[in-house]
Length: 510
Image (cartoon, rainbow, N blue to C red; front, side, top):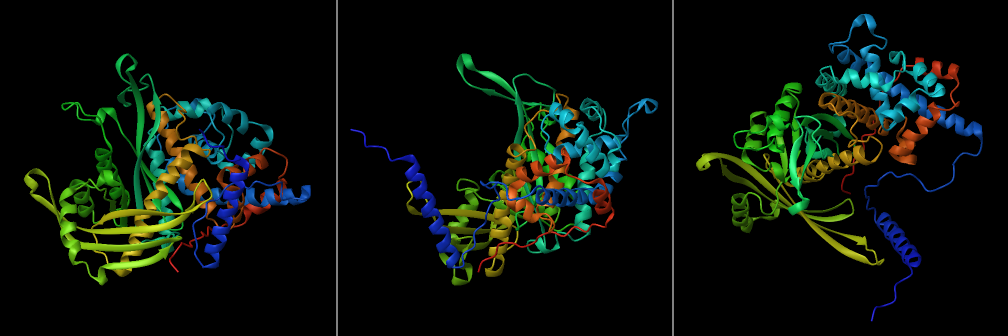
């Protein structure tokens, strides 16, 4: 006999009440936990039209001022792209089209048709041309698509890298380093999938079984992002997996580990002297990856899974019997009770006949925390994380390198999820052409940088906290497309100098 179901509304109210009481009890104990910005469930905070107008004007102009401050760096590189078009028949300059492409992703306008509709509307067009003189004109979107299919789109990523380099030179991230290094996370993700191949570079796979078995063609990208302890994630580089770069003789496609070495070489070329801490998942816990990092003088934190590198696990189990108090640390961080222990100086042999070897250091973090489950009960949860590093661990380094560094790799996963689900349309196929598709991808990543800087800019951080990313961008977009902005005030504010100041606070243990 089935038991009667609980009233869903009553259960939901009870769960929220328990969650609220739990948060308050943690706050009373001084336990700080990370929070995520979401759109509030409330009526408009403005009482009068004037009050709303002032808020819209302030946020929109400050957002535009930040973009205008970074455009010269981008345009200096974008202007170097060779333009194959007939120069006597050009209506829209290449740099103008690049600004248009960046703004379509900054404002999250959606597909090419939606971009055509929104950016050519009279009010939006007037606002954009006033704010961004480099835009010159608002083209039909097909003009940008045709251009991207013919130019060297990798130069767009060169402009993206130059923007990040300029931020590093200006020491904008100086207070966010992990043990003096710039934390860079790598992660692979699927961009799009089709039933028919659009270009010869698409990867392929068999899905289903029996009569329903079919071939899928897909695009896969290995992304590299700067991921800082305060939650800021800056897109850095993208490496597209290419069917034509696979091993034809062994009938093997391109893969993430092959793409890693190509991406690592490009990172080293772009940042030859930058102190780097690579944050990698368990897929990269292999000797050649560690060897590459050592040859480039990069440090690394690699997730070690239970079934990976049995040789390392065997030596760890042998040495762990002799762990002393100097190799242990307990603390409360992010509302979790953490217990660290570590083993240094583990020799890992790899390669043909295990002729190669590398010395690694292993840290284990066991933690427990409380959560409210679906039945409004306060339950105890637990977890374990293990990392490999090229640097030895001690009581001072283990927290910073594991919590502020190793865990930071999750930042790239959240960033990719944001690009897929929160307005950037990462998985949308803006063009069937391989070259143009990558061009749109690079423009989207530049736009993400600009919006990420805005989210942590001292002038705009409160507006982002209040509305979340999508809410903030919608607020700006509807302001630009309406009649809220006074041209004289807009021109006066845009003439003033702008200095980017970022919020650099990070979560630390009490």
